[in-house]
Image (cartoon, rainbow, N blue to C red):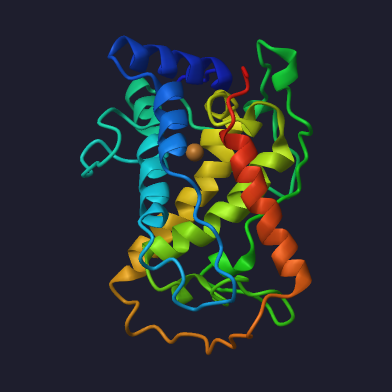
Length: 251
Ligand SMILES: [Cu+2]
């Protein structure tokens, strides 16, 4: 394995893809332009999102960018994922980042434009526990819209993807800098090897359990009639962040 500078290796990957006619910046930004985040419903709903194809597409598209194997069936990107490309070059992959610890030097990011510098190297943001197999501990909040308390409570990939996009937006925002815009986010190593690495783990874990979903016991959901003020504010903030991140940083 060759020890490489991760940021330089990502640049090299983007250049190589471009030479093959695949502009990753355009591809990623365009996908988000054409696939707007879903709007949250007016009241909590255990079935929300199950028919919104954004959810599945959001997870699948980023999976193809991050970790997909060359042998997998692909729907969005018919080039190598970054992990597959690193492997084929013999480049070392960074160690998995624990998001509650500062971003390690290995994943440092020095943007060409200083305005794209990260807001912090210690965002202390982790995906909520309802996206884990183990699920939430007593007293922790379920997913606000569907009231799912653990990964296997999500009814399908659409629902999972529609729900996870909101904390995903908040996470982009917590890191800041290039991560604030879909057309620059992929330059920051934390995009592929941090944030979307973790999102993809949720996706692939869910896929690995999917065939057993009908037999896995669901947590009994308590569906309140209305969102609390705090939940509404969180959902609204996440939606606004999504709109802002979608804006092109050059305008
Ligand atoms: Cu994205």
